[in-house]
Length: 261
Image 1 (cartoon, rainbow, N blue to C red):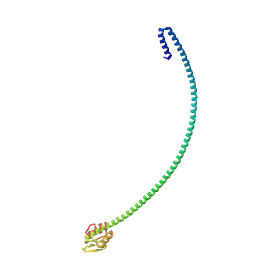
Image 2: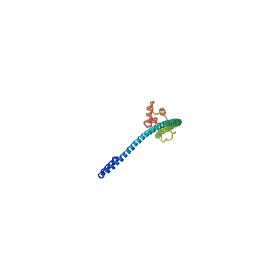
Image 3: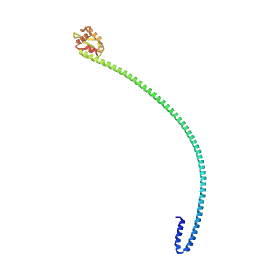
Image 4: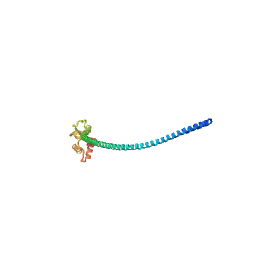
């Protein structure tokens, strides 16, 4: 409910109450109030029209101002965009130049470092090759020395073994001959002692031709000659000579044993 309607309702209520008391006076009062109210209404309508006019004017002013402001804003934004674009392009150019300079500097630095690395690697490789060559030569020299030492040692061993073998053979033969001599002529221990063999008459005849050391080195033909020299019961057959000598000495296969020494 508006304020006017409230006032009308209020006047109506008051009129109803006053009519009952003093109708004429009440109607007069009511007429005055209605006139006053109508005047107020007219004033309010005038005020309302003024407000509408003012609002319309304000609307025009605001629209004009807003449009002007929008145009200015658009110009400012355009100018700012152009300025930003120019500044950005300039900054981008500077960035590109800086990046290019930095890339060139890095490339030069990297190439320089790479050259140094390559030189160091080459030098290191040369040092390694030199050390390897020295080690290889040292190893070869060591192998040659070991080979020479081994050959010398092998020669010494062969010499020693040969000497031991000869000494062993002599000792074995000497022991065998000494045993034979002791069987048939008592005790003979010296290598230069003469060997004595008994003849058929039982007498011992000195074996003037050979000592024990010499006898152990006789071959088959020399032994057969000795057999014939003592005029043993022998024939030209080698096997019979051996058998006769063994039989004469009372020792089976004696000569075969001596030859095998």
